[in-house]
Image (cartoon, rainbow, N blue to C red; front, top):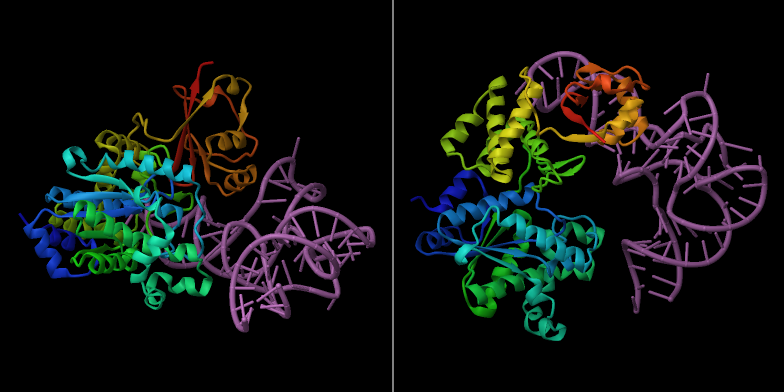
Length: 411
RNA sequence: GGAGGGGUACCCGAGUUGGCCAAAGGGGGCAGACUGUAAAUCUGCUGGCACUGCCUUCGAAGGUUCGAAUCCUUCCCCCUCCA
């Protein structure tokens, strides 16, 4: 069995490591308990988290024990890393809520049975810390001079950094110490933006416990142009099917740029590397095959095979010529009565959420961007009645690829 | 606490001798052309509405004025320097 470190390296996850050789040996020799932290800043995980979850899965497969740490405590502070401004403060209730959602989503990916993996919430030990004790016992190990030179604070020093956020690094370091004590956790992993926080945790454990522990960071999921992936104009790509439908999720990967295909296949699927390389090397139109596979594979991992197939069929139906039932396409169900007298196109578009104002709708129609059952809509005041429906269904399209289906409900 | 500089649309940012300001320019986004459901490029649009007009907006609330993003008052917030 190949060393999991080599696997991670080959697939391109690894960015920096505190001690490359030692970590490799450690993973070779023993069952390692490691942790990755997730701050509950929203009520669902998103694609950015998924890379880290993939690593956890790889690690668990190789027999190691993951700890998923949820930042119920650190979330109260807010990580300034990679931020240019203060995070929006969340209430305690919001955070608890988010932690709850995270836990649910996690169990879809990681096996927590029989202590094969652990979930913890750092609020358990951070929330009731005594300030004086904390700064005496832990704070004394941190040099402000050195912290100020840390990459994660640099741009904040120009823009402003509150003392609250400045403490984040201590909290995360303390987490590592706590997990080392509780579970003998010896490795912390995280996105590369966490490097400063991770090495300061490694330092803290070494100083307090005189123990060698390690840190490892992964590449952030970015496009070939260095932009963060998983974000669209309408927000992040979520793993929760309520927030990002499996169809939209599938389409996101189906539409990524050519140069990103190979990287995404390596990071977000379990396909063997030869296959990844083969698909990534495809040229011109051929590479569309690779994108389909990518979209299918990632959607399967996140939403299950059934949803992935539905999304794929829906996409093929819409973009190919096959007319097929496409239940995965985003759908709005409206009452039959509404169409009895007819409803104008702008109102209908608003109801489906395709447009956010009538002005936007007018603009789209003017520019020829709205289609009704594959026919271009030319008239702002087009009235839609039951005549427009085929089999109680009607297909709206915005631009080239945003489809939305309207179905009728008997009253 | 003192001194100074600011808060403009999704973001950055012009505009402060009061009207020509729904507010330059850029970015982002959306749409069109070209394509491969790609990229690059080019074009149009980008506050709301009953759209040749009206309404709301330039940190908040008041005031001056025929008329205010622009002037005055109070308040809130941010930054820099001093303590």
